[in-house]
Amino acid sequence: MKTKKQVITDNAEYRILINAVLNNIGMDSVEDVNNHGIDGGYSGFIYYSETHKFAMRYRNLIVKMLEESADQLGEDVVKMVSLFGVFRNSPMDQDDKKDLYKYLGGGRPEKGTITNVMAWFAAEEVCRMFEN
Figure 1: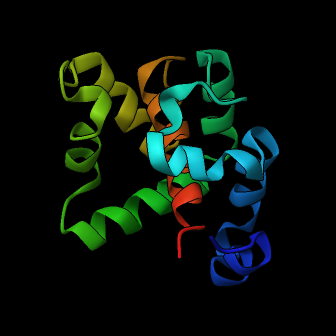
Figure 2 (figure 1 turned 45 degrees about the vertical axis):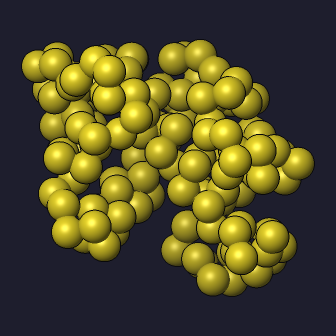
């Protein structure tokens, strides 16, 4: 596993987001998140009130990360998000899509599924940066 210093050096544009994730879950949980996902109940990523606040505070960096991931996969952002695990058994509905468009466009989405998914995405992507 890479050190925090290595990860920040390799991903300097995400330094603020990396620190924010680690301030919540701690370095000790990075490997667990990589092995089991963020939905296992990690500090700062449990309740909608927490994930909404996180997703809104770091929106610009999360959207940048979403766009880069979608580009790497050859997908558009909305299609990629609709394929996230949370939507596997319960597809994204119209309200979710509206909130996603609001989130991506700088609007004010409801506190709920979309901002929760955005926070979880950011946390998992940050943790993935620590893999060798």
